[in-house]
Length: 79
Picture 1 (tube, helix red, strand yellow):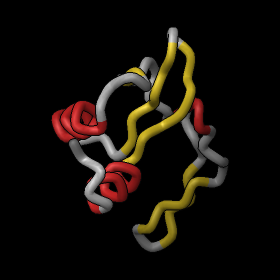
Picture 2 (tube, helix red, strand yellow):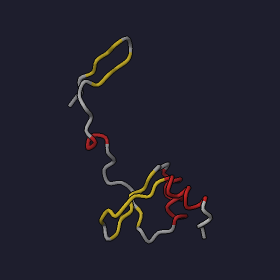
Picture 3 (cartoon, helix red, strand yellow):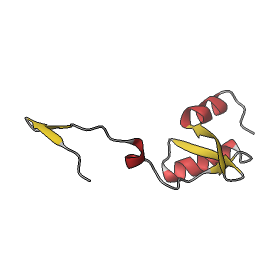
Picture 4 (cartoon, one colour):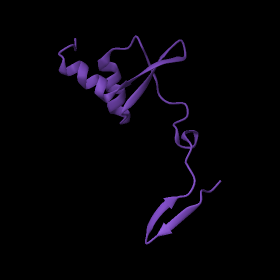
């Protein structure tokens, strides 16, 4: 379905809210909680992701973000 748009001098404004389910990524790439920080970083870099859902037995248990990885590596915790 199309959203109603208002055109004001070449600027377009949505007149209706966009729901998250309309723009979310369905079936996202995930990583297991048992993966290393390096493995997560490789997946995120290869796919240009800013965040990666973490799963255990097919269930969402968290999310790892660029900031999480930067904090980890900056603290010298990388092995």
